[in-house]
Image (tube, rainbow, N blue to C red; front, top):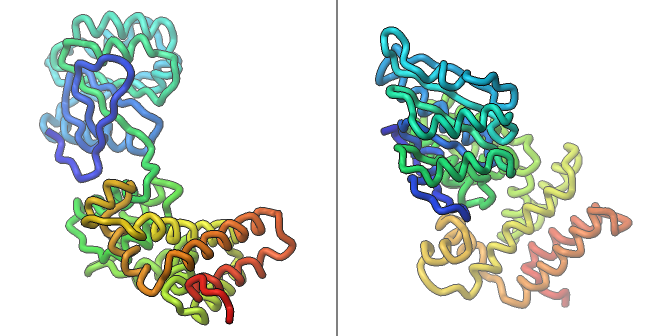
Length: 346
């Protein structure tokens, strides 16, 4: 069985499923492996994990690729059938969501009697094309599995993914550094994985926030969260200097506001919450470290002050998106209000 890191997640479909549904990092050998879902990076990872495992198990593995949208009739059976020396075969089939009628017919026939020693991977990125084949795989009594590759939308999922990258490499990283790297590459999972790989490769000791800033301090999101952290902690001068430095460096105001929004909304969720960090994390779709951080950030805040800051945040968001005359003034006002924890001026 392919070794897996944390972060796998099962999913369910409307179709009756008779086969195991696994996360991308739980992939294992099976005669038919359906890799479904829109997250192409995780799908590629899963297929590579499977290939590497099979190759390590038997170096004579034959690997062939089929494009389902330009399929030639009989191609699947030809590549999956045993060769003269009966080497194991891995047949990777891409673009199943764009498959030709000829491929669908051959694939449905193949499901009735998979070839011995062959591992057929069907990559379906989403959509209705090929649904009959997917339903047949999912309802199959054959030895098949489905690897579900959904988008990682929650910050907690991205944090777990990055943490698993470092854990798998045996590299230690501090929580603040991990949060910084996730914040810097939250919009692109492939870039996040690449950044983790670079830090793992280049850092001989524990990865700290200073190391992350040295490599990726130019990323707008990292600077934005640094400004938000300073303001929330009440360090007005530091936050204002950070804001002006970010703007002078060409930072887009929208991600700056988004960083404040992410922090304040998490604080609002946690405010008044009862239970352990793990309980609140499950309730709100957060990671336990986010709950702990929000609880620390809430020190000195009142419900009224937090509500006032969220209102100012909404006004600032509208201003930087074109509804205000002076977005820079709106940003500075937001920083001032947050650093003052939403207190009204005397």
